[in-house]
Image (cartoon, rainbow, N blue to C red; front, side, top):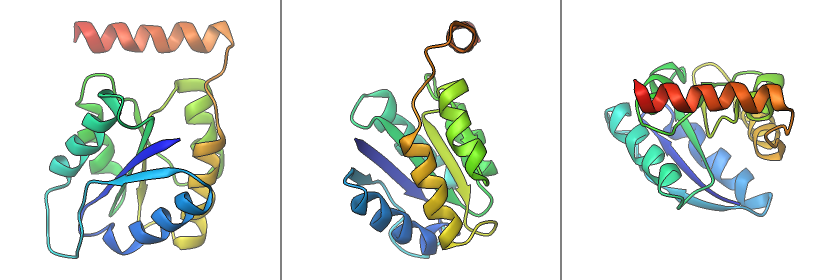
Length: 148
């Protein structure tokens, strides 16, 4: 799978651990920044991640910021994005299985490297359910996205 990852300055220290794990799992990764600990605005990075996902250049995205909350809000402003903050393994896989999440946001100030690796593994191994209830609900989200 080809993935895109982005971080702000608060997430930058954890991002390389996540990238290394993604590569170890055999996936491709596009890194849209940040590339150091200098302050950046998370909405700019979230937009870059979202654009790679909505264009089809990446199947899914990962954002790493301080708490994951701002990144999630920003990514969800982009049409076609379903972003979720995931700080536990259950949410990381269920968000994909039930809600077809395409951008996972994690907080580097909330989770450590070991949990981040587990979150990424869970997120990447999950697949959207074929259950008609989940498909119907996600279709309603798509319509909401279209209509505003």
